[in-house]
Image 1: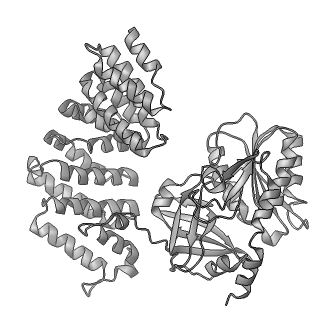
Image 2 (image 1 turned 90 degrees about the vertical axis):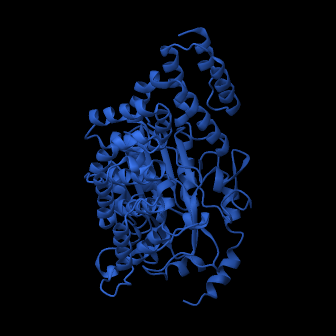
Image 3 (image 1 turned 135 degrees about the horizontal axis):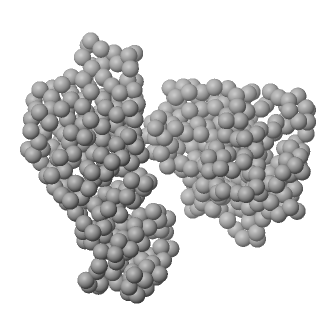
Amino acid sequence: MTERINTIISNLNLDTTELVCEALDNIIKLENLSQEEKILLTEALTAIFYHHDFGDTNDLERLIIRTEKLIGNFGIDVLPFLIEELINADSESAAYLGKCISFSEVKGIEAILAAWEEHDGDDFAIINIIQALASFTVPEVSKAAPKLIASTRSNSPHVKAMALSTIGVLSLNISMDKLDDKVRKSMFNAVFSLLGDRKPLVRQNAVKTLGKMHKKAILTRDQEGKVHSSFTAMLGKDGEHNWDREFIVRHEIEHYIQLFTPKKTLADRYKQSFLILNKHELCHNTFHYEVEAPFIAKKIKPGQFIIVRHSTQSERIPLSVCGWDAEKGSIQIIINSVGKTSTEINNLKPGNKFADMVGPLGVRSRVTKYNGTCVVIGGGYGVGAIIPTARELKAIGNRVIGVIGARSKNLLLMVEELKSACDEVIITTNDGSEGMTGFVTTALEEIMNRETVEHVLAIGPVPMMEAVSNMTREKKIETYVSLNAIMVDGTGMCGACRVTIGGKVKFACIDGPDFNGHKVDFGELVKRQKMFVNEEKRAFEALEI
């Protein structure tokens, strides 16, 4: 590697936007680059695609666009490297790599199709390959049409969905005149046949793709009539079918119809119903909800939370999320009736809707590989909040022990769910009616005596979290607690959720909710939580149940 390349790469500090821009400027000035130099520069530059935490999103977008063009200008010399990187990339980075490959036009298409043959059967690789095709705007990309059509018959719903999405994008980007009538008909039939697929993600992409094909005016009159008739039937307006009682529920079709509505506003594009799909009682006055919230389900990470209003007149309350299904587009929450608002929420039934939900908020829980044991502790309905983190800690190879604490057996929550996320689960009850007699600290002490504990996460009542933190402080065991501070807007603007961590003021909504338990001022937290006790009591007493 020449000295000029070495200097630029060594100064490519991805944590500083200015230094990245300076590196890009210096690369543009280089002349007579060898193939080896291009590949080495490309390897360094593609790291930007995986670096998604620049402070300013606009800065990141500008850097991405500049980087894509710069790598694209290196031409076919870097195609093998880009293809290899594409195969193993995450979804977001794969889109950026696909853009780089598209600058090579026909050669890029040939390279992608060759990779498709080589990795046939690897769904992860095929999804990235299909996504990369969506970046091409040259007519030659039509060579991929037969493979895209075949992919709509994949056993993987994700491959199907990506194939549909790419067909839709290509319908807008290239002239369909380059395809013969037989291929265009096959493409339409493949998309249309998936309107009734059992997976919501596939059905939604089928509808979107038909909308794009219609927008580009590439559907025949008969095909347009076929689509119109199907959607009329789905809405139950043809007098013959009632799809609500058959397969596709009305709220889903109403959402799909909006995809065909011209001039959608930004609000419409990101509209969520917050429909309660399921509800069941875990114990007295404590309920588990599954709520439709696809955009939250797609983005949320363990430890993050949401803020909800059950009606337009209610207060906003923060809630932990105990699980989610990104494919189904739903999240799960646990609500215990402790005051006016939570009691009102628990009067809701499946089919009702929350007025709104905001999220995901906060910083995700600390998840990394430890040498010692990880212990996750849940007190009361805090058990639900530790499950996602426990599952992710275990997934990356940690030994995870879960501890559940409750006053008695009939107040234990989500025991089986935690067992599925941990290597071992210990139950404690104050009265000894189930598991170990005592508190969660009793179980923690027993664990620390028999094995090396390196990380503890505790979520539940403040006294419990404080007791756990005090116990682990002497042994210098990394300990995090989730602070349930009073919260208003959840964005750091109001300052209501301020807490003191290591003598410094932090906001639970944007700096937490997880904090180092050894540095939390629990005394101040308790005082702030009691600020509105009298008002809460009067509100609850006035509640008409």
